[in-house]
Length: 78
Image (tube, rainbow, N blue to C red; front, side, top):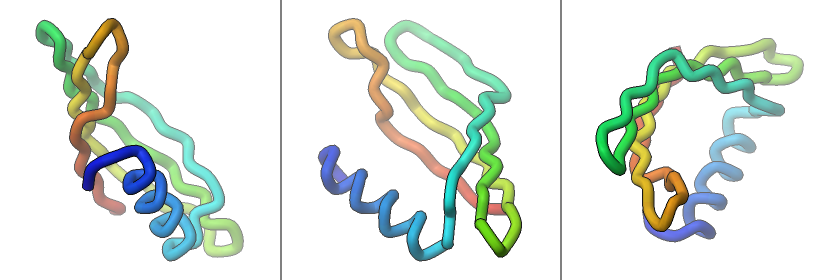
């Protein structure tokens, strides 16, 4: 997907469908090479009355004009 609105819509729909009330992210490792970085982490998802779940993620970041931008990511719920 491309664009901020498409990304925002994806996450809003996903949070609603999964019943996610909040998330706490924790970076486990990050490797920076030049203007790119790869972050590996875990997220503790608050599912309200349904308890919690843990997700693992990898994010590829790109630095453009002095800002780190989220370029690609992949995640799964374990």
